[in-house]
Length: 200
Image (cartoon, rainbow, N blue to C red):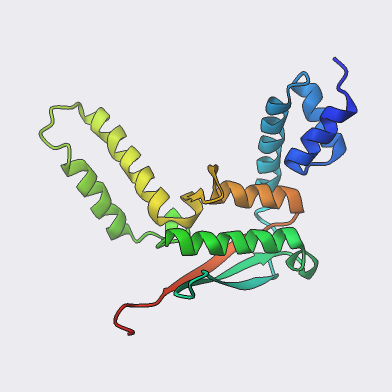
């Protein structure tokens, strides 16, 4: 089935991928635009994974202060070149992540930053909840893993649902941005500040 140019242009507008990539994805999807979006997304994530080893020496430190002036965030995001650090798409990504930090108040960047004792305590609490429930051990183990995933989504920035699009996690947003920009990008660290009631 021949794919018409109008569909290719529509897919490009939706994904920001190159024209050739869009045409190939539509050919592979038999002209189904939603399926083509998914194909491009998977290829983009694969490309992003390949770039993850590349060195990052440039980037931005960005401050976002919420409208009321009572809560804000400072974030450091790295990239490979100064050219990308000045790129509007990169800057929009950094700004969005800073807004995410202000809105959701994550405690950690990723799951590997959670101290072992904190993780163990969460696991214990989730397990105790079902002690004596009569459920088989393997069922309880699955429930506990589900509760831990939910916990990660609350406290780890990379696991959180993006406030502007809840179908995407911050990790997926990062990988999509890497695929679009073509450079390795890393969220290095962040800090959130909120005006304390006691003025401390």
